[in-house]
View: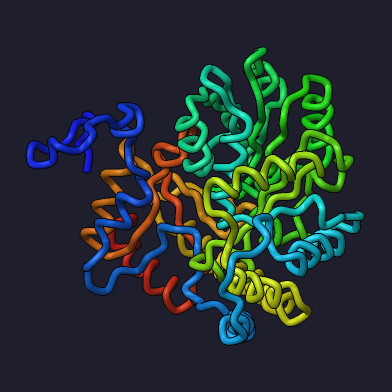
Length: 400
C-alpha cells in the first residue's frame, strides 16, 4: 500500500511506486473518522450516518433470496434489469404525476456510484462544479478526484430558523468552465428544501447557459408538510440538462444493498451504460429483484411508515435539543437530520470526538459538510424512539 506521500514502504520497493499525490493526500471523510473511532466501543449509539436502525423489511429480502434461489446469479443488463427500470419509471411517474419512460432510467451500484459516473462523464481538469452547501461531502470528493474545482454557494440562515438560497450569489459563481450545478433537496445535513419557484429559475439558467443540473433527491419522501418534496423532474423536459439522482437506501431501509438510480435525458443513458461497463459492469441481478419488491404497494406502505417514524422521532429530538441551554436549532420541514449549533464550539470534529468518548453517542461534525457547517453537529433521527431517547439522555450530560 502507498504511504501518504504516494511512495511505497521499503519492504515493497519492487512494486510500482506511483500513486497520485492528490489522492494519497486526500483527507478521509470526517464522518467516517468518527465512525471508525466507534468501532469496538461498547454501547455506542450510532447517529452519525444517514441510516435507520431498522433492518430491511422481510418482503424485500425474501424477493432477493427467491431470485438467488432461482439462479439469478449471472451477468445482466448493465443499466439494470428491464423490470426494475420500468418499475422505477412507474414509481417516479406515480410519485410526481408526470410521464416517465424506462429508457431514461439507469440502475447504479448505489446513489454514490451514480454521482461518480456523472463526474467521470462531465469533468475535465480545470472544469468546475458548483455545490449548494453545507452539503454531503462525497460529491465534492468525487468531483475533485476528476480534477474539477468545486465552488460553494453557501445557504444563509434565516432569522426565523432554517436556511435560504441566494440565487444571485449562486449564479455569480458560474464561469465558462462551469459544467454543472449540484442541488441536494431535501438537503443533507440541513433539511433545507428548495421550492418550485427557485427550481424553475435554476432550470431556466442551466438551459440558457448549457450547464448540467444535478438534482440529488434521495430524501424526497422525508418531508413533513406535504407528501413529497418538489422535484426538478416536474419542471424539466426529457431532453433538458437535468440528471436526477436517487437511491433505495433511505425510504426502504436498504443502505447496505448499495442500489441507486439515475434519471437522465435518453441520449445520456448511453454514456452511463459505457461507464457502468468500465466500473461495476452492472449491479447484482438478485439484489435488483429485491429492489423491485420495494416498488410494490407493500413497499409504499413501508416507505410511508418510515416517514411517520422519522416525523415522530424528529418531534422528540427537536423538543429535547431545544431545551438544552447550549443548543441552537430550528426544525426543518424535510430530511431526517437535526443540524444544530452548540455555543462555544469552534472545532466540531474535536467536540464530536469528545461527545463520543464521554457519552458513547456518535454524531457527525458539521465541518464535514463544508462551508456553513463548522460549529454544528448532525444527528440522524431515523432510529427507534428508545434509542433516540437514550442518546438524548446522554447528550444532556455534556450539552446542558
